[in-house]
Image (tube, rainbow, N blue to C red):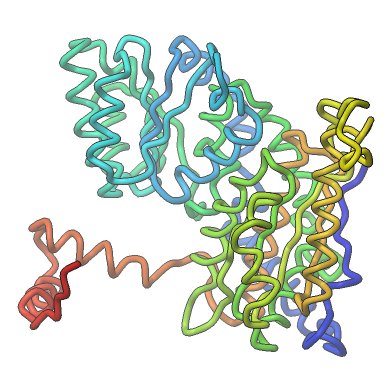
Length: 445
């Protein structure tokens, strides 16, 4: 069954009467797309690395599978895709009695958790995957230094067999380490930013370790991308540009938040992946809509109150599956007050809840784009991820901002480095000193 975008409730309320994207704007997007493809600056879309990846990845996966545990060191785009794929396609790890491979993602600076993990994991049965495109991400490198000592103390020189590096092909500290120490490594292609990298070695190595169909992910992504990668003039009819035009119309009509409401329970971690993709790409120059991940049906009993009865500043991407799994069936001896559930599959509840919430949002003035997935396998996930990545790029172009940089994020990194005593940050050091010396207004509780 094909996947589909259902538009009947998308251009509602303040979006009623918004004209379609002008042909001149579509043509401009097509010309820019052709130009950037020719310059090689959209590798997530054209996937020029695919052939080499399909050759290089299997032996590294085979090596990783010798171990029960993979400890992934990475943050942001180096972790969110892997987490979404693990939750969607290897959910057994989170369930009772799991005996298969385990993926532990160290995507934060939490001394307690990191200490606990190193105390509990057996170095002999653990492979560490360190992911940083630049090879200089301070959070990831700090973990690398600590894990290297942990492995070396237990394994001696054999620690190198327990380390895999995913980084730039030529530059950066991690590439230097891989070359000098003979560490297994995979490359992050040029121009492939972290939030667009889940369908590269960044996300596919941990996926392959868990036994996820990583080739299916690539196949699904390619199916969506190939029409416009091969012929950019076809972008006018591509669903990703339709999403971008809708997103731009939302912003133009003062909708400041974009709900990503996922009613495919095992796919809910894709909401966090999408949040980084959308926010880090489009939150610039005072522009952009705030992504709000939500889980159906869980969030019907929490934040949905705000969605339905709060400020009318929200649009919604509403994700469902065409065929909900049945699950167990309700017995015929339920109490009479619940007789209408007798003989129905548990999955019918999810389908009904999704329908009810979707209708309620529309009735409460929320423009809603319904995305219905015809399947929920790896190939389908690859298709959805590519669709949203392309839509994000095109939305940025329509907004006249650069959707592949993140200038504001860098400021916090520089200030943190100055706080730690790194050299080369005179302005940040001065700003930090002024901030720390300013009078504080403290209230204890």
